[in-house]
Picture 1 (cartoon, rainbow, N blue to C red):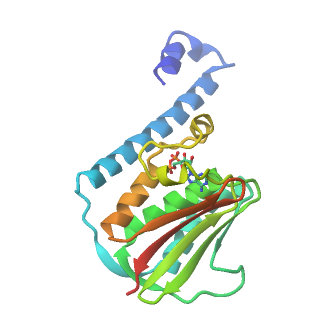
Picture 2 (picture 1 turned 135 degrees about the horizontal axis):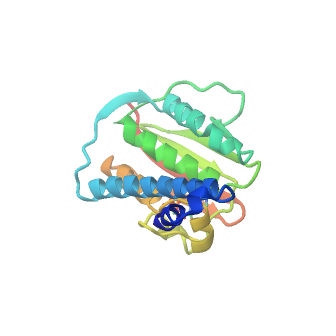
Length: 210
Ligand code: ADP
């Protein structure tokens, strides 16, 4: 950012062929910086134990739809379809759960954004709900690039990224899944990952039914 701005101040500002390009690059970098600061702030709050859950009863299906709608624009750029429920047609009943709605929303955002970032063109991301007696399991699955078996246990570590060069191209901070893991631990619930390289990944977490 500093390099581009100094170059602009040194005279590039008057050069019509590059001034806009340099401003756009600076803007993109500032956007990344904001994401990094936000993620670092979130993770330091979570790791210092300053996270206080505001538990309430809400419909996890409605929340999943809300987050899917918000991610749709990003997904459509890659031709990825986001589907809430097992099939495109069967209507879903509400599933009331007891959890922190805002933080579970953040978990869904991080998982959906990853499914798009690491999904394949014209792919499919599904959010499914599995009834487990007193809990519900929420599954976010994609048919994207997948994760190698040796990376699976490590992707929840902070700053861990499987393919350094490709991940850097994708933006992101390597903190998204660490944040997800912290949020699920604060709820005393689990999150697991199954994945096959080239086939896709499935992240599953549980929540107590209300
Ligand atoms: P970021 O996406 O910012 O790198 P995350 O903590 O969200 O950080 O993810 C860590 C790493 O796990 C990613 O860099 C990527 O290598 C891998 N990953 C996460 N989600 C997926 C997914 N759905 N499919 C394939 N790889 C994934």
